[in-house]
Length: 244
Image (cartoon, rainbow, N blue to C red; front, side, top):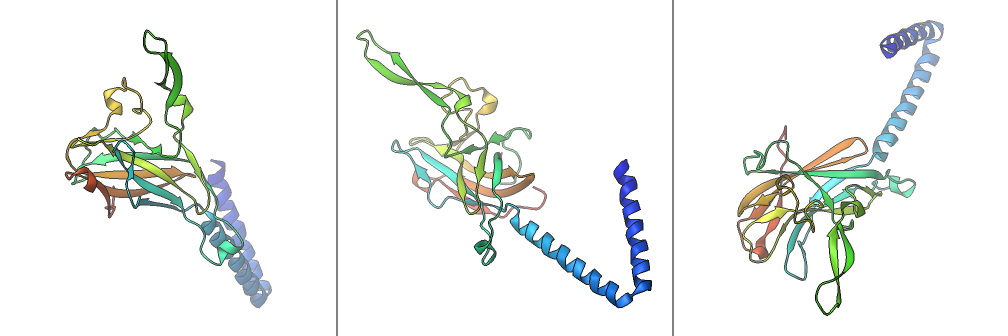
């Protein structure tokens, strides 16, 4: 309520000052007004350029594990400032960037229910598996096992100026026709509830990637090609339609 009264009051004062200034010395007033406008424009330009600028592109080559599992990922980058600005300053870092992935059909309808979104997993963060030592046989030889523990990983990362982070989208195992959304809630967790499982049968789908960082959202759309052999299993960038 106070702001609704304050803003008109400030505007009225500025109008009065402008009228008085024009009547007193028009040439000096216009010169001062131009200088003030130029200063404000430079400040706004610099502040705009220093804001984090998120780029989301597909990873050039799929990440393949020794066991043959193939991961399709995107690269989220906080673009560096352009030359010559980068010689004297850096773009602000992205703090606590979080990602969401929505799986869609080729016609951009939700594969699952509309409210179901996969919380993105940043590939370089620890997997939610805590090692424990157990005795697995009558001889008593210890073997390292793992227990699912979501507390040892995180869903948010910081991205510095010019730096990037890979983000998991889907994983496919050898011998499987389909793929699955890959995220922290299912890694090493056999008791994950159905709503945390994003199983995609053989076919083609869209993945809408949304990255929320520094109060702003960035989006990109990719096609998941999963109706081919695992060697050709891939992501394809596609144009983001308006309104998606």
